[in-house]
Image 1 (cartoon, rainbow, N blue to C red):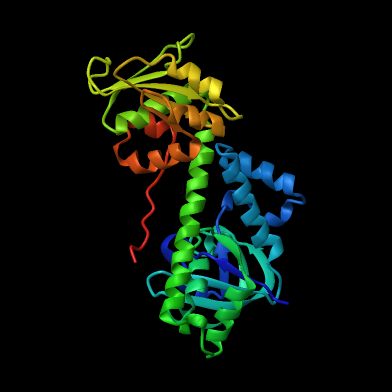
Image 2 (spheres, rainbow, N blue to C red):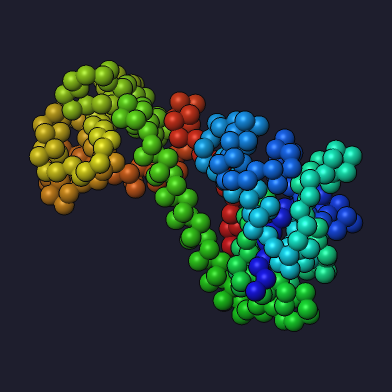
Length: 333
């Protein structure tokens, strides 16, 4: 059973015409030389690190995986597609089972690693189903297509009706589901990023969130803090209201009722308490906070991630350095 593969034609599809005219697809990583010389995954990984560095282990693993897919996993007879964002067209072809490394004068654009392809035709993105279009949105240089996406692509190429003929309400439901999935994944990844902070960094990050919310902050020096890790107020000294005292616990395991009672005992009239625990809280701890005579807010890592996103536009350089995020635009409807 043939599989399907997307091979990006460079940034913005700049090599789309070259792929078509030269009957091939190509990728870069030219400094590695002929990919056939690496007999094992580890040999390829070490060569990649020597050529491109190892600043981010995840990025290395991702790149090596794509290289191996291009060299090894694509088989003769598999379907290969590439995309032109300018034309909104997919070029669909059949892999010929031939990988090659090209000398500089033979390269496709500036890409030296190629696979021979017999192109079958083009498919307009507008003719594909919504689920297919969504699946093809990945920016990875090389990735495998699902059987459903490949089936839709082949059907349109053969002139058959596409699943684009969904009823409008079905398309809308699918779009909403995808949007919610992306939001959920993003939220969890932000939580992962926050969880990687050290306890000291977490205190400074809590202060950064409060600064983004309009307060001036003071982080307690390391050592006994009498239950206060961050002090926030309009003046930064705690002389004007509201005066917020923050206890930060960055550890596994939920905080219990005794922890909350101890924190409440440090508060005085005019204080507002915030207890931040990335390990969460027990039910009894939440009950203690609810019945406290002074305002006490419990913030778990889920709450912290939402606060981060809601206020990130106003983060200062220190806060952005602790948890770097980028904006992703999504259709409003």
